[in-house]
Length: 265
Image 1 (spheres, rainbow, N blue to C red):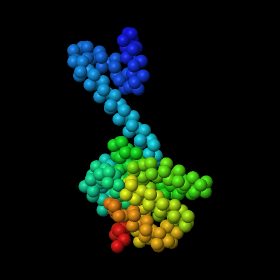
Image 2: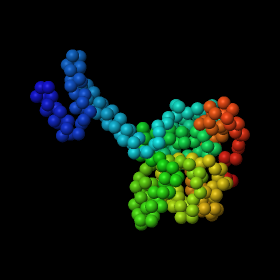
Image 3: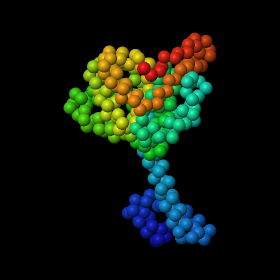
Image 4: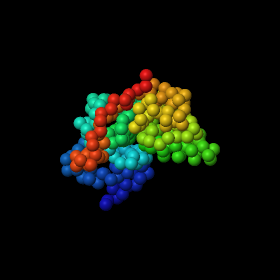
C-alpha cells in the first residue's frame, strides 16, 4: 500500500465512503491498465458507493421488517391457490398502493398462501426502500396492551404503527379479542387510515369479523369501513399447501371450494 492509497482510505473514512475505500485499489489498477479517463474513473467509484449503500439499505430494511422468513413472489404457486390472478399480484408488486396509502386484504382458509403473499409484497417494498413492518395480530395486541397498561400507548403507537409506510398484520381472526384489545386494534386501523398502507390477512369472511372483535358489531363495522375504503381485496380459496403431501397420501380429504370470502355489502 503506497502513501496515496493510505491518504485515499483516510479520506474515505472521513467522508464516510466505505464502498469507495473497498473498491479503490482494484478500480485504480484497472483504470491504469485501460487508460480510463479520470471522469469515468470517478464516476465508476461513485457508482460503486451508491450501489453499496443501496444494498446496505435493503439489508437493513429487510432486517427491521421482522419477517419470519423471506418469501418472494417468484416462489408463489398460482396454480395451487384458487382465485389469485398473477396479473393482480404483478400490479401490487409495483407498490403503487403504498404511494396511494391503500390497503391489501387477503382472506381465505388456512394454508392457501395468504402469509406468503403478504411477506413477499412486504419484502418487495423493503427492497424498494420502503420502511416496512411485519407482525401478527396477537403480537401486535400484546405490544399495545402492555403499552396501554404502562401509559405509553401514544409513544408505542408512533414507534410501532405510524413510523412505517407499510404495516403487515397477519392472522386476524385466529384468536378472539376482548373489548380492550378490540378498541386498541381499531385505533391501529384508524391511525393508518389514509396515512399509511396496510396488508392484512384473515381466515374469516368479513361477515364474521365481529366474532373476533369482542362481538361488537358497531366497532367492527367502523373498523371495516376504514380498512376497506381504499383497499384491494383478494379472496383466496383452495387446499392447504402445507398439507398437500399428506393429502396426496390419503391422510386428509380434499377441502370443498368455498366462495364466502368476499366483501360485506
